[in-house]
Image 1 (spheres, rainbow, N blue to C red):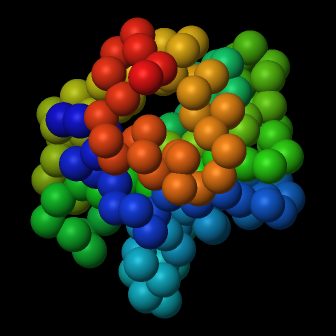
Image 2: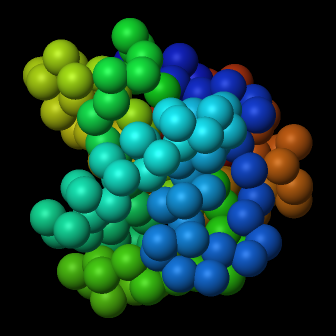
Length: 155
């Protein structure tokens, strides 16, 4: 599934004051829940619960926090580029500045794993990471993520 199918423009942001990992997870939960209070709390707890099992940082300054929820019938994502990197417990020791958070329905077992694999592969591309970090503003990020920047291309 292309990244663009998981995202909406209003769920792609530049996070100026993330503070720490919990602050990032809270911001991601608000985005994934479209700021609905009950859903935000549910998704936030799901993200934190998963993070307690082990860091979702995959290296190179990338984290893919994810959790399950009954709030939606389809998977949804949110992308946050952090102005100041935060410690996420990555195995390579690098702090995280690019976060792709995901909420998936409870029944998405195989699909969940497949989405995680696709995201990890996509963010393994150094040109893609550089393009995301070099985007001058949120409009540039949205263009890169929603218009299907192709693998191994920064055009």
